[in-house]
Amino acid sequence: MSDWYRDFANSGVGTTITRQLGLPRPAVLRRYEPGQPLLPGPAVVGSAGAGRLGNRLTALLRDAGVAVQSLGAADVEDGERPAAVLLDATGLTGPGDLAGVHAFLAPAVKRLRRSGRVLVLGDPPTGAESPAQAAARQALDGLVRSVAKELRDGSTANLLLVPARTEESLAGPVRFFLSGRSAYVDGQQVTLSGAAGDVAQDELRPLAGTVAVVTGAARGIGAAIARTLHRDGAVVVVVDLPSAGDHLAEVANGVRGTALQLDISREDAGQRIIDHAVQRHGRLDIVVHNAGITRDKLLVNMDPARWESVIGVNIAAQLRINETLLASEHFRTTPRIVSVASTSGIAGNRGQTNYAASKGGVMGMVRATAPLLGAHGGSINAVAPGFIETEMTARMPFATREVARRLNSLQQGGQPTDVAEAIAFLASDAAGGISGEVLRVCGQNLVGA
Ligand SMILES: NC(=O)c1ccc[n+]([C@@H]2O[C@H](COP(=O)([O-])OP(=O)(O)OC[C@H]3O[C@@H](n4cnc5c(N)ncnc54)[C@H](O)[C@@H]3O)[C@@H](O)[C@H]2O)c1
Image (cartoon, rainbow, N blue to C red; front, side):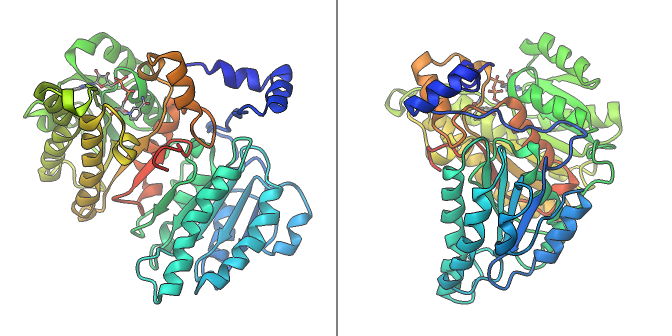
């Protein structure tokens, strides 16, 4: 879907007018294209406190072909403008150490290019040795979210928490946050929980050799997920209702995969998915629970049918399918599940008690299922999209849509491909150190931020 205002704001006359009137100036975001360098310029790396990740960070950036500018705040003023600023803020002992965070970030961020990346690495506040240490660690969260709100021109800031013994899985998440794959991920926090992450040898096809199933793939975000997983090398099975059969066949042909017409709320849906994947493609590695519905009404006017259909499709079906997957011998080799939640499930939304309950449920399910998949070396995560430009949001009344799509730090709606890129990352071995997490793809939506 097009965003005429963003296009206008980036035209010659539009730039002048929006600047003079102080109107929002949404940037054209840097998005991933296969084969492009990880960053369009050098990265500046620094540390505050007794950081333990600096050398590792520098090495992994060099491995990824990134020029690392310098390690000291004093040198930041020289050289080419950085495309990324990375701060190792592990090892903080108390709020006094935050002065070092400020001293490094202020000059570095000032020189950041358009569509730049700020990535801060920290320790999780849980497990701190003292209240002062917990305070300093937690302070990073507020600080990074504020930096994200101050950045302009399509730049983002995110926080990666790296507990002890998860360092081995750092490379994949760092690359994701620096790349164009995370264009619409802003002001977020991800915690590593394992050391199983591994960057793919074949950078262009990180999902080569896998078979992935995507539900609700006949259109919208699901179709984008299918295309992105296919681009990344997976064999894709697309699933949707029989009534969406024609569109589903088109998507399946486009990704040279196969179509399975199936209502995911059927009792035997999990088994049908496994049987199709194994019989047609010989295996099953990745399941993306994307199918979802809305049946909006204020709580006081909500009839049981609206309530039950939304809970039934959006959460009960996922739970039942996961139970079948977990019991199957065909889903045992680094199995990966990614569920689509929603920022409504975090912040709540008027008229969406049923939908927000179902999406909150998805997040609870993901956290509780993580150890079960971990037993097979796998992972499960959720992605929570904010305002995404789809047929659903195109149907909103003009004024409501304009307000909703600008109410985030990037001042624009996300594209279905932004959600798909986050899902493709979470479905890959590069994200093997991440499980039980909810990643918002919402441009730092101000609602529930
Ligand atoms: N569009 C947004 O801004 C947005 C924001 C947050 C979350 N989401 C979530 O993203 C997901 C995709 O959203 P979308 O905007 O592409 O929606 P969409 O309505 O365009 O597509 C959903 C697809 O799911 C299919 N589906 C519905 N019920 C099904 C069932 N029982 N069995 C099999 N397939 C079924 C539909 O036929 C449709 O093709 C949903 O889970 C939605 O809740 C969307």
